[in-house]
Amino acid sequence: MKNFFKSLDGAFAPNTLRAYKSDWEHYAAWCENNQYEPLQSTEDSFALYVLAMGKTLTTATIRRRIASLRTLFKLVKAPNPTDEPEVILTLKKLHRKLGRAQKQATPLTHDIYEKLIGVCGDDIVGMRNKLLLQLGHETMRRRSELCSFTFDDVHLVPNSHPALLLKRSKTDQFDE
Image (cartoon, rainbow, N blue to C red):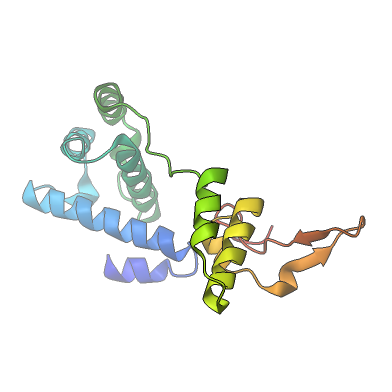
C-alpha cells in the first residue's frame, strides 16, 4: 500500500492523504491483530472493527475513518464492506449508545477578543498579534486563512470600501 499512497500525491489535499494513510494503518493493524485480511473484508469483520473503534473513539471519528476506508477500498478496487447493512446497523447502534454530538471550538466572543487584545503589547509583535486578532474576529476566517493573508489581498470594491480576497480555504481548495 505504500506505493499506492504515493500514487495519490497531488490528487488529494495533504491533510486528506495523511488521514487516509493513518486510517488505513489503524485498520490494517486491527486486521492483523484479529487475523483478517484488510483487502478481503466482509461486512461481519468490518462491523467488528466498527464496534472495536466504539470503545475508544467518538462517532464523528468513526464516521470519518469509515469514509476514508470506503474511498480507499474503491480506489484499490477491493470489496467495499462499508455500505453493507451489518456495518450500517452497527454504526447506528453506536450512535444511539454514544451519541452524535461533537465538541465545538470555543468561539471568539467579544469578551474574549477584548481580553486578548488587552494583553497584546505595543511592540511590533504585539501590533502584529492585534492585527491578526482583529482580522480573525472581523472576517471570521480560519487560522490557516489568516496565515495566508497578504496585503495584496486587500481590494477596493465599487463603494470604495476595502474587501479582503480569500484565495484559498478549507472549503474551496481550488480557488473556484
